[in-house]
Length: 115
Length: 118
Image (tube, rainbow over all chains, first blue to last red; front, side, top):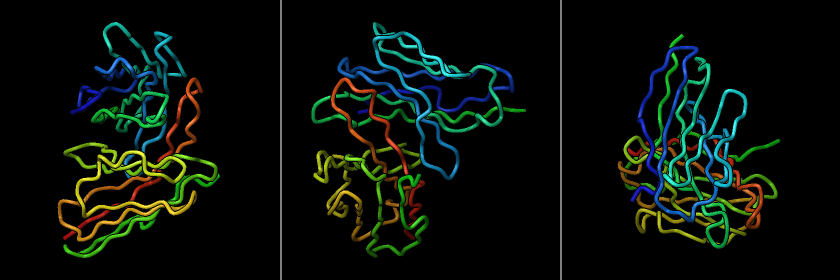
């Protein structure tokens, strides 16, 4: 059973456009929501993360929007660039107890930004 | 800074052979994860260790898979015997699992071991 559901599976955006990737979860015990970025031939790397006590977090062109009541969170990439072309994974974890550090990943979104 | 180091980077082996993947986590990290990535199933957690102790191995596909962490700086994932359906990228990752209420547990991934079983 997929603990975190991610959409779309693939996304094509023109340079300068906004890329939006959405994720949903069911387990209300999740309290840490990171996004990972993976380039071909590389391992995933942390991009940005949020905790449920805030509704938005921005780092440069990347913003996470978090809706606790809807159990949804999304990644927005403003002014998308060809260098942003990668696979993006949302994830969630219960940041305490025996599951400390264990991430549940979405299936990934392959983003292509056309120049 | 040395990241998570995995070896081999690429391996092609024949069905039935034993495969051993190796991982050196980031120094000082206390949690280690083995993931498998395929197009069909995405990123799957196979097993994770905390302070060298296996915490959750429910993702290990079957008895052909085994993982060990004899010390804080080394882990292996073994497949014996290997099958074509085991072909995937296997990632090792590590983190410093902080106590609850910390800044969040960033997991650092290695570059993966690309396994092809023919």
